[in-house]
Length: 169
Image 1 (cartoon, rainbow, N blue to C red):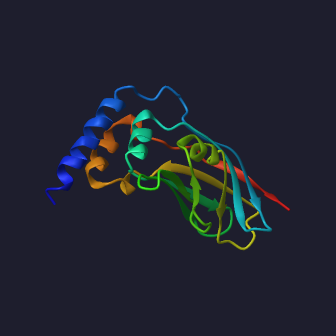
Image 2 (image 1 turned 180 degrees about the horizontal axis):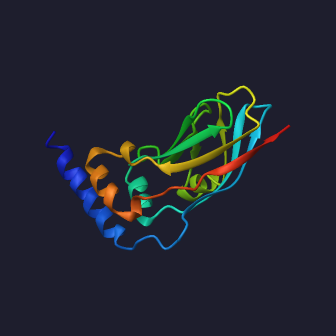
């Protein structure tokens, strides 16, 4: 266990230094469009999100970031879909795992973040013709040493407002 302490200390120090820059975007997380796609039983989302420098530094140090999507169909139970972003240092690749789909691999962080502009989430529902969807950064999915700072540091807050969706043929 003593092996991990210096490693986590170095990561926390580097995140604290990067975290001083702050997040400039007043609305760093939005869902610009959402539509139900009945052929694939999925929700197609167009996202606009800006990760803080602290979050990007964490990702580049191998700390996965998890987005928790809350899906509220007009008729039926609430669902949660998790989308994980991670850097695999040994492979020098970034990975996007959106649950039901196979994980996508990217050569650069920019490619990974660009893939988040349009996202398709599998939804386990019969035919939801309407509903609302929102997402937030799941700070409880962070490693234990980062959870407490994430509660108080606004650089770790990323949450969208709920957006209504419509059904597509």
